[in-house]
Length: 128
Image (cartoon, rainbow, N blue to C red; front, side):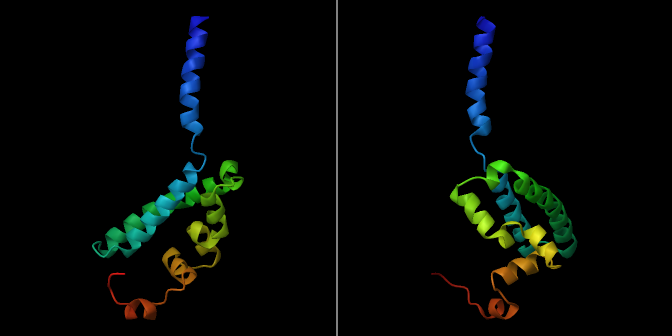
């Protein structure tokens, strides 16, 4: 009886921590997407290093996007993070939406944000 009580107590202490964040996969998706964009924009990497890093992140991002799209906890969540993610599908699910439009992810991201080469080249660095 004492062992059963001990197991129940340990399970009740552990289980809230496991299920506390139902949006964990969505948060991982955002981190990976940021890493992909960061790697593509990193000027300290040479072409081969950038390509290897981007390919590695790209493969993980494809898997994470699939997991998020299939995760009922995320799709049915009323949390603002989840709602915003699905309202901005083109940016949230960057790999899938760029594949649908036959564009590289960085080009698709820039077009969704309405960034052009001209606007970037004409921008001035400064403080706001």
